[in-house]
Length: 108
Image (cartoon, rainbow, N blue to C red; front, top):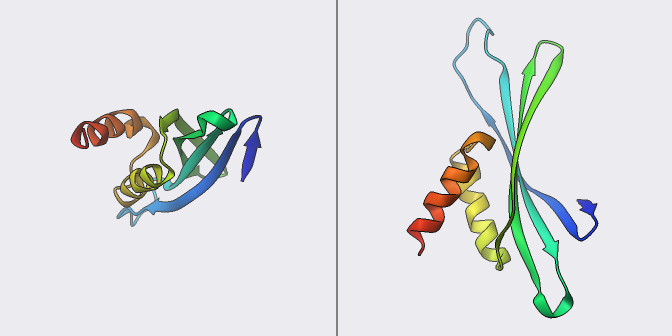
């Protein structure tokens, strides 16, 4: 868990993107799905956001890409449901905003 002022970041889950690459030309990809808990004033409760971190291992270095949406849901249960969908479908940071938009549209 990482605390930043009034925010806590918890790793919800991790997965690897498997590729057929017999020559080893493509880097391995590791995805982390982070639940962000935004602690507000006591009477306001808290909100939950999502962050995805993509790590690509290239030779001797790791390239990192990340995307975050800070406050999406008031329900931790709903945030967990969405994180599970993202993890199961191996959504990357670049796809996060579009996928969240699609998920939220379907549940309206």
